[in-house]
Length: 151
Image (cartoon, rainbow, N blue to C red):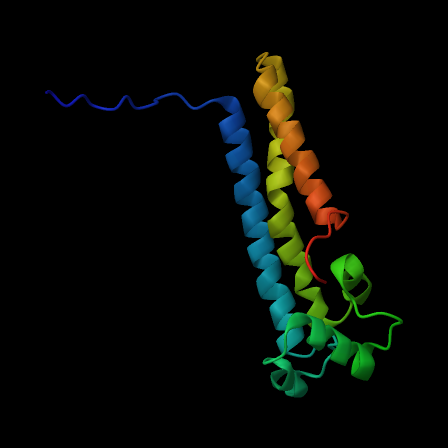
């Protein structure tokens, strides 16, 4: 039995390059913003919702208990900030860190959306539909409308 070499793809499709370029730029933007927002938080440039010297007291708590406690002691909203409610607190140093995390999580949706026109131009309808569905599913999941679980 002779071993056949696996064929190597030597051609890169346009949509692969588009996807990779957007992913690279999005990743670098997210990483840069992570460093910046962390520095803003640690150096006290933006006042955190929870004082930096108090944060270690909450490390052992689950997220639900933590959010209830900080809401009671520091934020004073009608309900603890769950889901996308952090956006209203993004001016605080500790919640500002969520911005680059959301960018890093959302860059994949942008990548898929960006390659749809190229796929359609190449008449690759199946992959174009799959990309559109992927964007819709990821967007729906990120929206919080598909709440599952106990919280």
